[in-house]
Image (cartoon, rainbow, N blue to C red):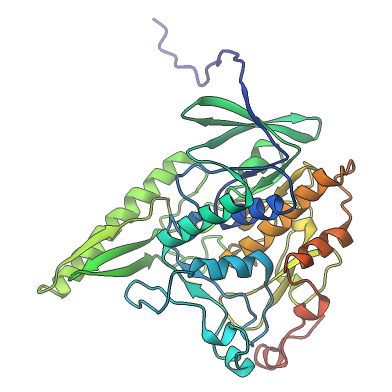
Length: 428
């Protein structure tokens, strides 16, 4: 009797129906993907947005990470506009006043029109939002722009014609389907399209236990969060607390969810013991794992700390640093346009940025910036029938982005004098 168990099986060949033909496919309905889909659709091309969950916003909403991190440098200078700013305001469109227990905070008054500029140095340009209201607002925005949304649809593979992607293979309730497009945006958060298409990628397997959730305390809904200490360079160093988890291994995904919930139950128990006269129970758990970083595109160029306060001629957007006041980084087209797949753009936390700044580029505002640039670039290829996708006309792309409200200018990356003094920064 043969007791050997083969390590692989051969799947029978099958014919896969082409379900949809469009101009641009966006994989992933987080903030980066929503921004990419909106930006492309507003350029007048047909867009399909694929999302494996049944809600938009990714970690921001489904993960309850409800902090729309600052669009400014911390010294009163706004460095992100366009869809990053539009979605910030949309995140709290229903919020008329703060709800501190739930963690909901409107946009500070000083960042509205005709406000005191000096006050902006003391309050950053941010919001904290209701994740459920924001999900529905994002759906409304996509509907208004004519984007075709496909929920409960997971990307499984790509088909290439030469160097470029011609189709993505997906699975959903209708079975295994193909979607054909001219250009593609990978906003999966895990660089799935880049990985499937053979692009160089890098994994970050050092996620720690974390969960953002809501509990009810004596009838009041309260935001509750916890996270083991993590390394901001996502290398498992600097006193980061194991166990560590990869977001690209199915065993780790399940283990992270289960162990985070086990820790959550322990924290709820301790809360109840510390306040025996109150009633505390979990109310809303995140519906996706709270992974910070999983896998990213690894182009020949990767944005890094060394690019702080330096201008890039192919800049498609700018970001500040949510963690502290002062640092400003340009985001070049080279960081979001895949080297090894000319009709693929990568947006959000899986853009090509190295370990020194990936904790910055994963932030919600920066995801919107790269999403908008990816969407407009993808649409421009279609509308202008650009054959050499490796040589996009950067001046036109920058002009289209500026017309949409994006902030792109060499002056914006210059450090504030106070930042130079306090952080001993020297402009390049």
